[in-house]
Image (tube, rainbow, N blue to C red; front, side, top):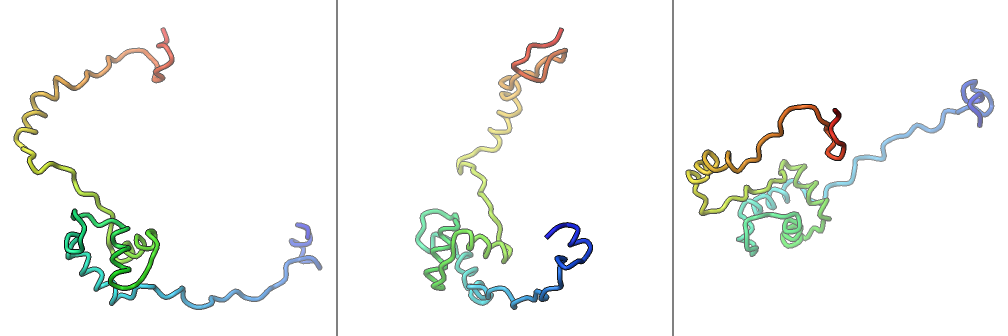
Length: 136
């Protein structure tokens, strides 16, 4: 089939084929809204209640909870998409020591850090490339 026959509508031109129609709605979700509401209650109870040592929900832990409570096996990505679809987001806790003394940190930043901080390079002719010598 050539470009000329397509453009001219000749014998080799494109013909109207069958109209593509939707075959129906996408697959029904493996977890119904009522089931997710129950899962959400379990998630809000925390990880320690479910036997994990710390308070961080990972996708693998949520996956195990889905299998245990609902008998539904999703991939890790499927778990992420399920949570995201219901408004959950990925969050990392701030890593701060429990013993952290905010007043001591503020004093260190104010007094010690300025002397420890490297000085800025002097302004002058040079190159932005570290391997190239400055032009003179």
